[in-house]
Length: 168
Length: 224
Image (cartoon, rainbow over all chains, first blue to last red):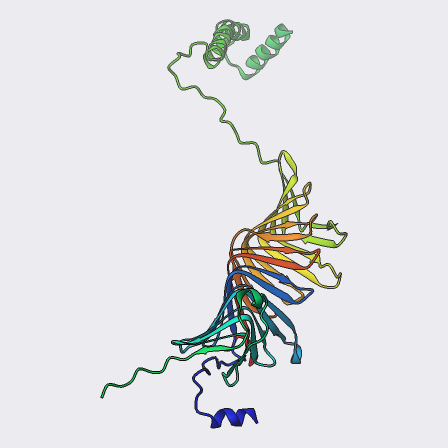
């Protein structure tokens, strides 16, 4: 089903976030607190997490882990908060207030005032879902917090820059 | 008594037919006595002179003083072989300390230097445990702290393993902390940081400074 659709479709311009969700994750930060009883590890300060070709920056990142199949401890979920910036290899990036990476579902959910960029193309919305298996991104609009003040309709806004015309 | 001695010698001489008037015995004895009259006083004077000389009475000041060198008194520290210390930490959990030797510092009875020390602590749930080993450690029985230095290895039954160069164990608070870099691995992956504090009461580990963690991928442990 979806996999076949992804193969058929030409490479989408916004499908740069594909990465191998099974690859090791490297995380660097100023400090780390491990709460062994709650099976949580919280990275605080200048957090940089890298998996394959994808990189995530944020102020704070909490990883929840549990014992999976075969008794191996595995990451279940990663939640990043504060100035979240996700970058992929080919100059594609997404910014938001928070991001949630559910490893089993192989997707990243980002929220509140999301901005998706690829080169000069920009898409704004309130929620972004990135499917790491196919690399597809889906942005949805919706009532934003404080939308009345900013006068924003909460709808998705996209700005596509047409490629420069080739001179004849 | 000496005459009877002389008559028997005279008879002996007669019997052997030797001439009597040549050397009468009495004169040999008197010569001995007169010799002693001179020799004995001289001997006494010689002895007296020797004592005077060796008593240093004639020593001059520029001579080398011979004095006994300060022999360093042997270190009267108390040394114990294969000591074993058991106790309860602040939350009543047992801990055991063993070492090759324990040496009590002179003048500081509560400071004990331990060689090849191993400390085993029970964790908060009383089933898991942490074991620390080091080449040397200084135990303070008053503050119930153990300052481990040099090669330190920390193993926990929960799957954590750390290595460092200086670790302080506070049995009263139930904390293990290192102010120097630590590196190790746990169930999730490998880790390094500039400093660390582990709190047994609430089972938290806190790492500070250039923290770097590598979480194993799902395919296999640490595979690229």
